Amino acid sequence: MPTHTITVMRGILDQNEEQAAHNRAHFDEHGVFAVNLMSAPGSGKTALLERTIDALAGRFACAVIEGDLETDNDARRIRRHGVPAIQITTGSTCHLDAAMVHDALHHLPLAGLDVVFIENVGNLVCPASFSLGTHADVTLISVPEGEDKPSKYPVMFRSAGLVLVSKADLLPVFEEFSVSAVTEQVRALANRAPILAVSSKTGLGIGAWIDWIAAQVAARRALREVANTRGDAPAVAVGASS
Amino acid sequence: MHELAVSLALIDEAERVAREHGAQGIAHLRVLIGPLSGVDGELLARAYTVARVGSTLTAEATLEWIPSVIAVCCEQCGTTSEVAVQRLLCGVCGSWQTHVVSGTELTLQSVELVGATH
Image (cartoon, rainbow over the protein chains, first blue to last red):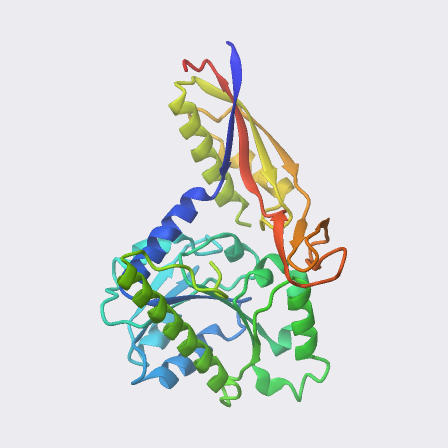
């Protein structure tokens, strides 16, 4: 049977990108700042969210979408702090994608919310390839993991809008860990993202992290006001990534 | 690890194109993979052989993947240079004010269709 070759030139993950764009439009419609929180397993994402929710109480209304292969342990931890948490259990899938977030949003009314944190599956590789429709990617490396993660995981770290060095209370114990080495590697990826050392346990650096969130929320609100005045859809905030 | 998910998305896209052209099957897929796409070409090729089993149009289709190179365009000096994966600074002036112009591709370049009607 005859064959002929059709040129396609389409992104293989374009469908995920389209769903991500719909998710982002949904967040924008409600003026919600959405964050994709990523790291290796055990870097302290959930502990950071617990600390963050307490720090934002009374200032911004938050919700969390949790992603894990199994259990709803993390969603339960978050709910104890009095905010809605939706748990996505992926079974064997090593990352969240835009369709999973879309489905989770069916269970999470955005009216009245200011910030939605999406805690991705603990994994420094796969989540980097799957846009969720968030306004910013925040990537954690914890002090015990070692400082060379940005060089080892360039795809993840080159698009981080903010890098958090977590468990920073352990810096005196891990003398060989250098935050400036982390910064150097991130800059070598042509990424100008801020690097903040934080400790969920002691509160070190949490103020700067909260200030960053507040600045992003304000920037999104300002963009939304401009868009509403002009009758446009909100634009992408400079400095935030997909 | 996520190469299986990517293979499934690849098959979906290829089959969409095949159906659009009224094809009876797909003989060959050509894919461009950049080092910054987060996808490993060898793993994708292996995952693909699993993913295509039982699919209507892609079950016999061979997969060819081509790597792209990483190139950045410098906002400081205006040149485009080929660079390494951990060092996306300008290859000419060393500036960090670069943007990637090649190397992030995960693209279905072409499909060879069998018995397409249009």
